[in-house]
Image (cartoon, rainbow, N blue to C red; front, side, top):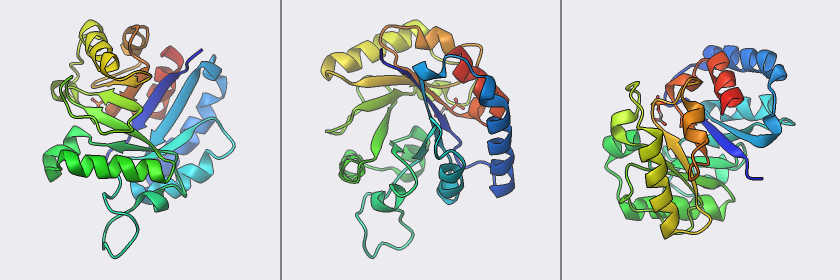
Length: 220
Ligand code: PGA
């Protein structure tokens, strides 16, 4: 049976003290989660907190991801955090999120470099696409369909529309996993994860509250 994949994207939110509260609450309140064997959970904090999340969740089923990576391998690239460094703390990395696309205007070539380097260092890229026509780099095995109108707005895409787009994405690439992202909550998560072509969800705002995120995992 394939597991439902649930990814938390904290974006550029929470400082050290706040992350600590989140971890403590999550660990305390998640012990009653049922059917967790059928779910895979990945938490993606900002770079400075990868170490604490990795330590806090080592020996559990929770995996850690980064939110981006450098398009360059290790070298003299001041300010860049490369795939080899991220691999010390994480197994996944988000690539091509629309918020980053809007801020940095990155090209498809750059995304291809990022995916290539992630794979080189055994990080699994979670590549974000905004619609069914978005370029997907070679080697991508997980994509997240995240329509811009649904991100942080409280207005998700309909499960039917998301399922149709996931189906189209899969028809172009065998064995691709497709997540849905955009205003996912504990109330609507099941309407997406029960769709044939949707393998999981990428959760932003609703993952910031540990109890709401636990409920999302429970309901997915
Ligand atoms: P949201 O964000 O759940 O807050 O809409 C999703 C995302 O940007 O990954």
